[in-house]
Picture 1 (cartoon, helix red, strand yellow):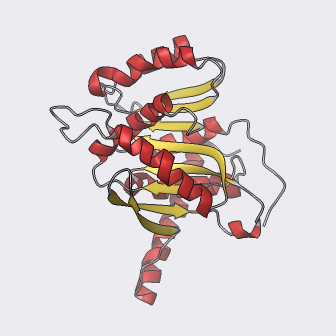
Picture 2 (cartoon, rainbow, N blue to C red):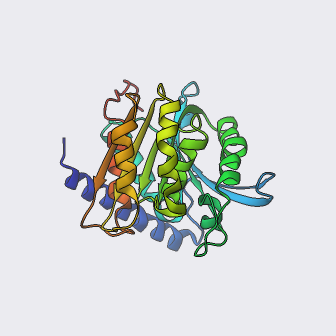
Picture 3 (spheres, rainbow, N blue to C red):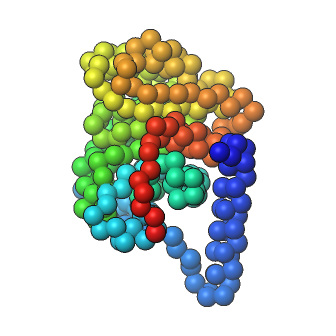
Length: 276
């Protein structure tokens, strides 16, 4: 098994080669190079048009009876292609996790979509409940009907998106199986998500989830109190881990966090024998 540092270099090299290919393709064809499907549709819950990017596994139609886990990526402009590279390398090359359908969820106002309440600093916040209903009632049913999706779902959120992932766990616990929370803004709304977590865990003692949390060199994200809650109240069915990347900034730890998150979630995963 290669070291984690070697894996980072290999995946980054793959992404750079992909970027070079995209540039060359654009120069030769004078047209856009697209990975996956860009889909736009009208949301009845949000009362606005929303866009998503869906990247199914390569040649997935060769296995018409197979269902694939789905990973929902918030802030896809920052994390979609990192997730794409990591998922493909880990699943196809290393075979340490399953192939997945990747869904990038585009937001025009991330504070409105991700934050559970408005504040003086973020007056447009408070739409997390409606955004969660959109994912649960419109987006997931669409993906499940249009692609060979299994019931296993992961959500990746960074900063306010990481806070939303925790909010989703507390308010729609059956929606996602696993959570990768990158430098989550757990300080927001007077640590409301952390305050709700003990009661949530006590009421859901048989729950089975995987939660990965990362922290950069930021000092006021509110992550440590949340970790203390997990240490004290998490039942046996909650598999969780936490890494403090002391030398990474709020904007630089995403790639490492996604790698470590998938490694934790699929630590005991066993690959099948199918290859193509």
